[in-house]
Amino acid sequence: MDHPADAPRPHARRADARAVALEAAVDQAVLAPSVHNTQPWTFVLGPERVEVRADRRRQLTALDPLGRELTLSVGAALFNLRVALSARGSAAAVERCPRPDDPDLLAVVHAGGTGPDVSLAEYDAVIPLRRTNRRPLTGEPVPDDLLGELVALAAAEDTVLVPVLREDHRHLVARVTRQADELQNADRAYRAEIRHWTTRPAEEGDGVPVSAVPRMDGLSPVGVPQRDFDTRGEGRLPADPGDSAERTLVLLATRADHPLAWLRCGEALQRVLLELTRRGWVASPVTQAIEVPLTRTQLRAALTWDAHPQVLLRIGHADDLVAAPRRPRGDVVRNSSRPPELRRTRAVPTPGGWPPGRREPRPAQRPVSDGRGGTTWV
Image (cartoon, rainbow, N blue to C red):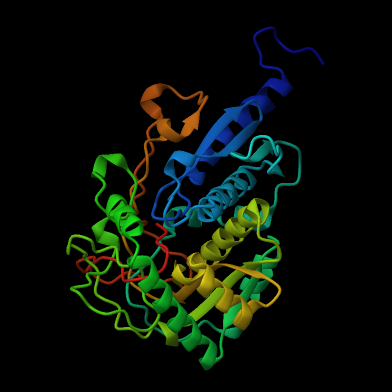
């Protein structure tokens, strides 16, 4: 069949559609959670593919000297890419850690082909709704059937999810988290790093805003303490009353402990977080005990044995928060075909329609700063 001279060929139309899908996919990827909202990633667009790279300039040298949590963060962004491409009718073929001589190249995602993963596509609308919520949690524990589904979702990403159900295990988590928190806060470099990422100018588009962390007022950590991000006494969320050990806790772990395993765990983390968001739950990581080698070993011996702890999540219900700041799109996306005026990351408004089962937020309370302890992801 002949085509008019000025009509685009079918292969050209497919290439254009993939380019549009990739541009939209990176818009979703940049909304992923990251440690201290560092957003340590760069996306390099190419014909029918995108490179997902680590931005080592944004690595937390005191908290994360090996880049483990940086890689987890990039894994979460990679999962968003997979979701967004699937939602736009494109299969996503992923090469993970493809070049040992280029450790910053953590993945290459190829768009195209047939058979997008419809099970991933349903998360696309949920990505802008996800929040790292450090408010005090309310409500009943997560039902067993949902915990079982979370276990299966993590397993699909080569990650083990361990619900922390026994009372003695919950109190162990609380104890080693407090221990790790004390050790970390005794380190001047660690405290300086916390101050740096909680005193960022708003126009920088990153870091942990005071609206997202609880006010501490010199309170001693109790229960499973959140990290103390209230460096200026301006936190706007209520302090956690300390009953986190009574809420649902789950631990994500991996069979190996290297960058590929960390990347996969980041994908599993985001898949679990999006499923919880879709069901009307909120979650936030508390990972101090995983960041300190001594307490990480204690967690492994008690909870996972042959798997390496990577992320601890507290899960419950809480009022919604405003979206965290995001870096300008032009700082994180290279080779974009969009005009310069369209390359800014759009602010994510609080949605008007909530997923089935999610409670409508009550009138906004004054937000507050984070507690003492765990890693802060936003």
